[in-house]
Length: 312
Image (tube, one colour):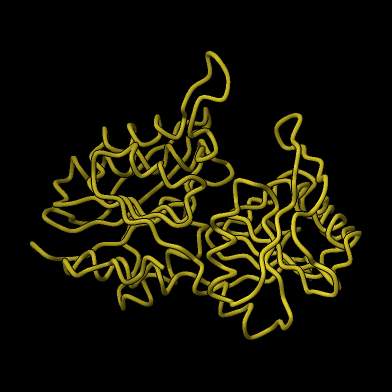
């Protein structure tokens, strides 16, 4: 069984695991994941994994702590069952925004998550569009960091004309500039001031958006305050219409209601995080699949082939 591939899903309700397995022409392996009445999580691997190359597909999205514990407990179960190598496939890396000390006496929780994964036997990580690229350095094991850019760019090129890519804040300029270069269009930046977490106030636009289709680009949308405020600012500065793209649709709290009430024409996201019912019913949200990209990366890792051509 030395080179057998096994794919597991910590969350039975996560459809991307089935899609990835289908691309790999295998089935999701059998594991019993249960939650006891007191909230404890129990995992039992229901098939032989000795000597196998095992991949746990698990975004640590809402409920973040439950999904994180499912991931680390399943990794421990696989390690104790003598899996040859355990790879954590994280389409969305929870706690990624806590990647540095922004005030005295606060944790760097993204590092804590990395330490947990390594401690339970994870020997490789496959992730997509980390909030901060330096999170890769929190691991002392190989990290393959993929980007949804090719899929999002293809959608932009095929569906929009006369566009300008817009970074909703200064932190996303590098990401947005890369998109603008690939789309061969201009770049604008929204000067945003944030006075507390999950709250922002867009101030003014750096760049000329007059008469353009403005497309705001971000790695994730949480409460959607940044995007909605940014859309108003862009329209006030003469943009013809406003759309948005992101890799991770966190969409917590009032996000969907804000999107519905906003001037944003569409929000294009990937399926890195499964949408909740209210988001599924929102006609402004369009979902693009990244399962084929992740499946190709898993296939190459398993066969010891280069993954670098996917890092675009």
